[in-house]
Amino acid sequence: MELTVLSGKGGTGKTTVAMALSQLAGETVMADCDVDAPNLYLFFDGEDIRKERFSAMKKAVIDTWRCTHCGRCEAVCRFGAITGGKVDVYRCEGCGACTLVCPESAAAMRDEKTADAYVTRTQNGYLTRAEMEIGSDGSGKLVTLLRENAKEVAAAGSLIITDGSPGIGCPVISSITASDIVLIVTEPTQSGFDDFVRVAALCAHFGISALACVNKYDINEGVAERIEDYCRRHDIAVVGRIPYDDTVMRSVNDLKPITDYPQSTANRAIRQMWENVKAYINK
Ligand code: SF4
Ligand code: SF4
Image 1 (cartoon, rainbow, N blue to C red):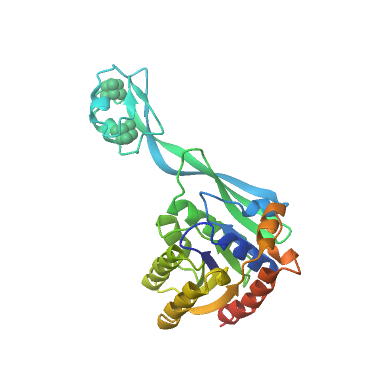
Image 2: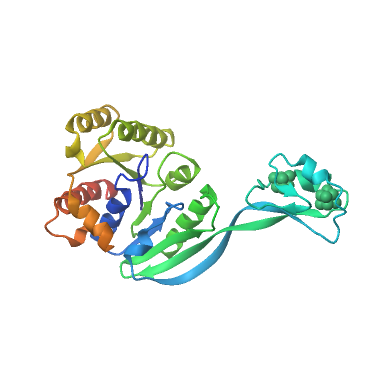
C-alpha cells in the first residue's frame, strides 16, 4: 500500500504531515520524492545501506585529440554550450546535434551523473532518498527509482509513505502514478486553493483517489470553507483540519517530528487525521 503526500506548492506543511504519519504508522518505508529539496533524512539517525549513481541525461564531450577545431559543432549548438572546442556542461541540453555534424567523430554523448540515490535504514524503517548534483534538476525517472527502491525494501503488506514534489510537473506525476491513494496538503490562501485544485485535477486525471488536509485552516476560515466545499463537490474526503500552531516551527528547528510534542494542537489534529486516513488505506 502506497500513500503519497502532495501539495500544490512548497511550504504548506507537506513534509511535516508525511513525517508525522510515518511515526504514527509505526514501521514504514518512506520515499523522499521531493528530490529538489529533500529533508526527511535530517529527522533520522540513519545508516545508508545502498548508494547508487543516477544518470538522467547525456551531455556532449569532445575528444581533444580528434578535434580539428573546425567550429561546426559550435555553430550548430542552439544553446551556446560549445566555445573553442570545449563543452559547458551547465549549458548543454543533451540534444546531440554536435555529434551529428562533427566530421572527425570527436563529439560524443556521455551519461551525466545527476544524483546519488540512497536507501537508508532508520530507527523507524527505511528511507529512500536522493542527493542531486549541483545544477541538476529532479526528474521523473529519479522519482520512479526512489519509489521502486521503496517497494523493494518494504516488507509484504507494509505501508510506503511517499513525500512527493510540490507542483504538478513531471516529478509529481511520477510520484502519483500507480499510487494507491494521495493525501493533498493545502493551506487556506487563494494561491493554496488554486494549487490544490490543480493537484486534485491531476489525481482525477490519473484515476487516483485523493484525500485532503487543510493545514492552518484557522488562519482564513472563509477560504478553508471554500476548499472544503470544492472537496464535497468533487468527492474528495477532507480527512484533516490542522490548526495554526507555533510548535510546528519549533519541531522543524529541533529536527523532531511534531508527534513528539504532546501539548501541540497540530499534533493532536494530525493524530485524528491518521485515524481518518487509516479508514481509507484499510479499505
Ligand atoms: S549536445 Fe546539443 S546542447 Fe549539448 S553541446 Fe551538443 S549541440 Fe550543444
Ligand atoms: S565539429 Fe568536431 S572537429 Fe569540429 S570543432 Fe566540433 S568537435 Fe572539433
